[in-house]
Picture 1 (spheres, protein in one colour):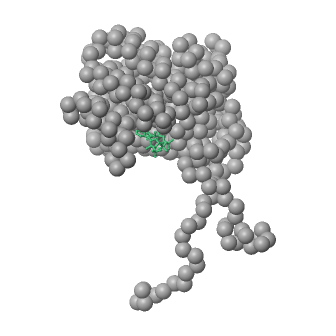
Picture 2 (cartoon, rainbow, N blue to C red):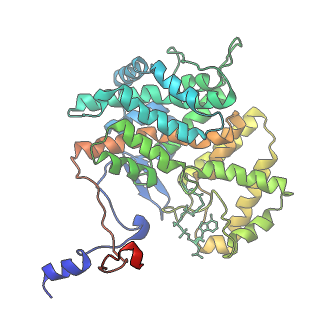
Picture 3 (cartoon, rainbow, N blue to C red):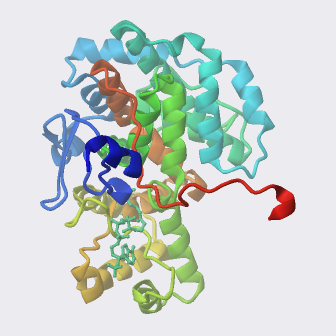
Length: 401
Ligand code: ACO
C-alpha cells in the first residue's frame, strides 16, 4: 500500500498518547523536573535553595529572563511593575457586574482576558521590548485583580495598593486592609506567602502551562493566553485541588473525623471518591514542594498559634496513606496542594480563593513559558487525533429517517 492511499484511509500516521503522558510538546530551558527522583529546578537552581534564599520577585525574574537579577536589575524590574500597576476604572465596573457568589477563578480569568481590550497594544508583540512591556504590565495588574476578586467576595471596598511596599507585602495589604483600620504587616504571613508563591511559580508543561503555550502559539496576546491558563488551572484535577482538599477535610470533620472510612472509599473502585491532594502525574516519589510546604505549614501554624482540627485530620490521612499498600503500590504521595490550603486557611484566605493564590504564584512560570515559545518562534500547536467515528454515510432527508 503506498503512503498516499494509506494517508487517505487513516488521515495520516498518528501517535496516540491520551493525556500526553509521554509526549514532549516543546524544548524548554525553564524548568527541570525528575518525577522519579523528586527533583525540581528553575533555570538550574533547586527549589529547596530558592525557597530558602530567594524572594518571589527574584524568582519571577529568574524564570522569565533566565538568570538571577543583579540588584539594579531587580530594582528596575520592580519599579517598572509598580508603574504599570494601575487598573482601568472600567475593569472595576466589569467586576461590579459579577454576582457576589461568582467563583473567583471565573472572575479572575474574565478580568485578565478583559485587560487585552484595555491594552490593545499588548497583542501584536513583535520585539523583545513589546514583550517586556506586556510582562511588567501583567505583573503589575494581576495582583490587583487577585486582591479585588477577594475583596469582592468579602464585601470590602477595592484597594489600590501601596507602592512603598515590597511586591508580596503589597499583595497582602491589598487583600486584607480594612478601611479606617490600622494595617500592620505580619512578617510570618509575608514569609509564608513568599514561599508558597515560589513553590508554585513553574512546573514545566503541566495542563495550564501547556494551555498558555498552545493559546499563545496562535499569536493570541499574553493576557488572553494567561486567561486560558487560569481556566485550565481551575479544575479540581489541577490547581483546583487545593480548594478540593480543604473541602474534603472539612467534610471528613463534619462526618465525625473517621479518616479510615475515607481511605476505604478512596480505594474502592466502585466509588468515584479520590483522596484529594494525593498523587501526581509526574511525581512518582515525594513531591519536593510538598516536603518544603509541609515544614512551612507546621511553622506557620505554630507561629500564628493556630490549633486546627482540620490539620489533625490531614496528618492522620497522610500517615495512613504512607503506610497503605494501595497508595504505596501506586506511588500516591501527598502533593503540594495537600498542604497549601492549610496554610492559606491559617492566613485567613477564604477557601474559594485558594486556586486564585495558585494562579498568582504560577504567573511568572506561565509568562516565562509564553515568552520562550514566542522567542523560539514555535509553530502553532495543533495535535491530531485517531478518528473512530462513522465511515462515509449518505444523507437521508428528515422525512425518511
Ligand atoms: N486517590 C485514590 N486513588 C488514586 C488517586 C487518589 N488521589 N490518584 C490516583 N489514584 C489511583 C487511580 O485510581 C489509579 O488506580 P488504578 O491503577 O487501580 O486504576 C492509579 O492511582 C493511577 O491514577 P491515574 O489517574 O491514572 O494517574 P494520573 O497520573 O492520570 O493522575 C492525578 C494524576 C490527576 C493528580 C490523580 O492522582 C488525582 O486525581 N489526584 C487527586 C487530585 C489532585 O490532588 N490533583 C492535584 C495534582 S497536583 C497539581 O495540579 C499542582
